[in-house]
Image (cartoon, rainbow, N blue to C red; front, side, top):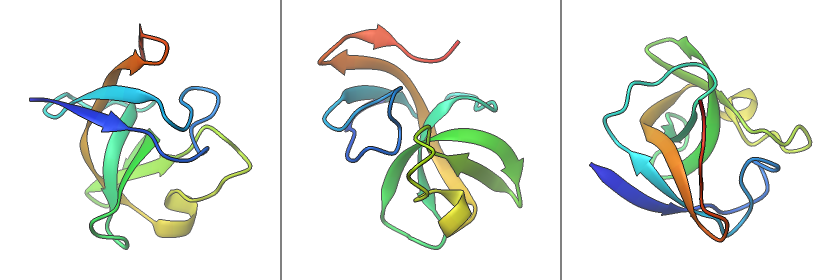
Length: 98
């Protein structure tokens, strides 16, 4: 299933910016380096857009692309991935990833 998601905050700059609208492929295979939508186990109910770094403890270690923002696995631990971000459709359409 493909889901629309709106990016909030600066943690994925320069790859994605606040207000970007993206499409997420829910059942996609996740690999290190993919941009994903996930939920930190320590913050249930909060969906985030981050980059998958490595598999860890049955989940994924995630980091943002903006090194100045650390609201990622460095603060919240392992996350469960919901899907892979595949396409930005607003405001500047384009594929993400490989």
